[in-house]
Image (cartoon, rainbow, N blue to C red; front, side):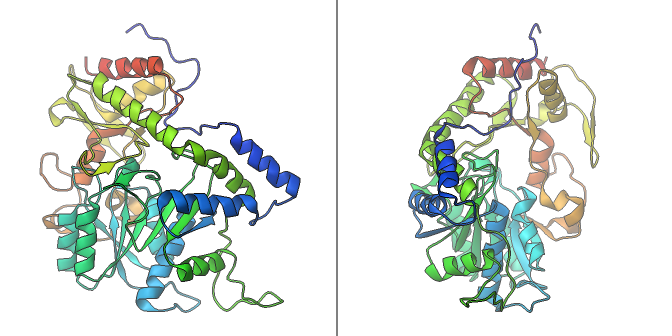
Length: 422
C-alpha cells in the first residue's frame, strides 16, 4: 500500500476551537473574574440547562465531580447523611454500567459503596435491561443504578427506567459522553433522577475540563453548589457543618464552554458525517459500526467505533498492559489495526475495557442476562454467548473521529484499515 504517514497527526477526538472561546476568557480577565464565580459561569449554567431541557445545571470542575456529587446526593436521599468518616453508600451495593470509563464507577467507591456491574447489550453497547432485571432478582435490596450512554449513544432508556421504577431505585444518569444526543426527541441527561455531563478536552464540546450536574430540583442544585464550595455555611466566618469539596467550575473554564455552546449542533453534524463515511467505506468488510436505535435515538456520534466479525479475527491475546497477535491472511484484530494506524500517524483506541475485567474491580459482582457472571468463569470464552462486554472489548476499537479530519484524510484511514484485512 503506497500511503505515506500523515504529516499532521489525525487524532481520535481533539478540541475544536472557534474563536468565541477566547472572547469570553478575555472578558473574564478584563473584569478580573478569575475565580469560581462570574458571568461566564452563570451564563454557561443557564445555556446548558436550556439545551438539556432541565431546570438547573451546576458547573463543576469535571464530569467526575458531577457524578460524585450526584452519587453522594442519591445516597443521602436513600440512606440519610453519612458520618464525617464514611460515605453515604457505606456497605451498600450499587448497579453500574459495565462498559464505560472508570469515572462512571469510581464515585460509588468514593462513597464507600460496592459497584455491581451489569453486562452490556448488543443493540446499543449499553446496560442490558435483561441483565439489570436479573441483578434485582439476585440483589433485591439495591436502590441505586448508575447508567452511562457509551460513546454518545443513548441506551435502552425506557426499559431501564421501567425496571428501576418497579424496584424503587434511583437513577444517576452519566451523560458525560452523550451531551446533545436525543432519545425519543428528549436530550440525554433528563432521564435519571440526577444527571451529569462532561466538558473534558476530547468531548463533543470542551472547556479543557469541567462538567455539569443536572437536575430539576432547586434543593438538589443548591445542595451541590454548597458541597462543591467546601460546604460553607451562611455565616460571616468560615463555618462548616458537613464535608465539602473544591469542585466548582472556574469562570475561565466556563468562558471556554460558553464559547463552545453555539457550536454543539455543528459538531454533532460533523461527527455524524464521519460515522456515515466509515459505514460506507467499510462496505464489504467483515465489520459493523457501533450500533444505535435508529427509530428512537439520535446519538451525538462522539466516537465512531467498529466491531470485527468473529470469523475475521486473527488470534489475539491481551495481558494487563500489552497485547500479542498472529497475522493471518484475510483476518485482523484491534491490536493490529491500532498499531497500523499509529504507524501512519493516526490515533485510535481500544474499546473501553469492561469494569468487571479491571484489576481494581475484579472481585466485584458481575451480572449477565443469564445470572451471576462471576459464578461461571473469570475469563471470557469466545463464542460462549455470555459476557457481551468482554466480547465487544475483544473485537472492537474506536476509530479516528476528530471533526477536523477531512473527508480525504478519512478516506486514507479507511484504506489503511482495509489493508489490514488483506
